[in-house]
Length: 65
Image (tube, rainbow, N blue to C red; front, side, top):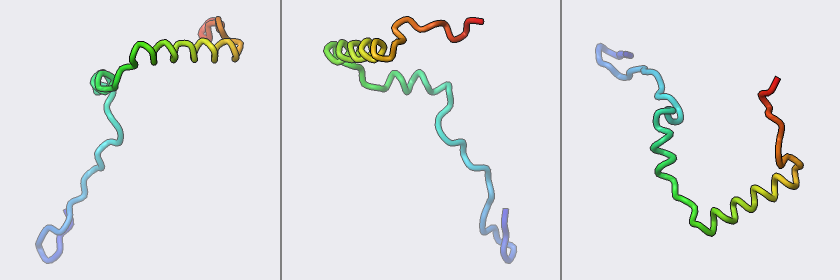
């Protein structure tokens, strides 16, 4: 605490952590809007198209030794 003339004028405390805690992730994900059937179908097509263009349709296991 910082005092002036015997009176507390300020208090220094740690800043709160930025962002969210990992334990909050399920609730955050549950609160997000869902894709409709048509949107989900188009999204899947976009992913398939991107994979075919990138040449990684069946990528190797990056963790394989």
